[in-house]
Amino acid sequence: MASARNLGQHSDMDDNECTSNDYILCPHSQLQLCLKHLNYHQDLLRQDLYHLSDKYKSSFIEFDTYKTEQDKPLKNNLIKQLKKVLKQKQINIDDSSNV
Image (tube, rainbow, N blue to C red):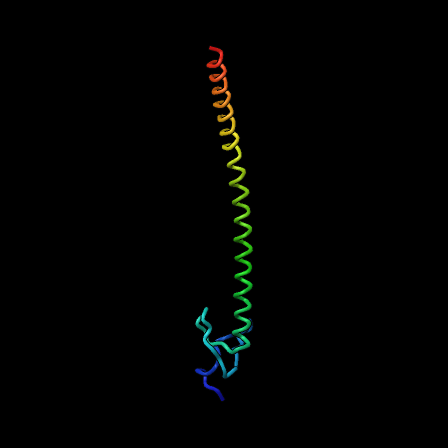
């Protein structure tokens, strides 16, 4: 019979410990896990990573949309000011040519 030292450190939802004698250190959690539970653990981490990536993309799109909406009034105001300056310059040019 295997000693507790040789058993993996994975427990299921019912607190039943894994009885495998072969295990490897998980680089993420530093737990001693059998190959079956290591693969399961990696799948869970991968799912978490995909979920975080999706949340990041969604947040980025939301922020970009917000930023674009916030920039619209500033851009419109700048365009109005530029048109006003151009119109004033055109008036000055017209006045200069009439002299």
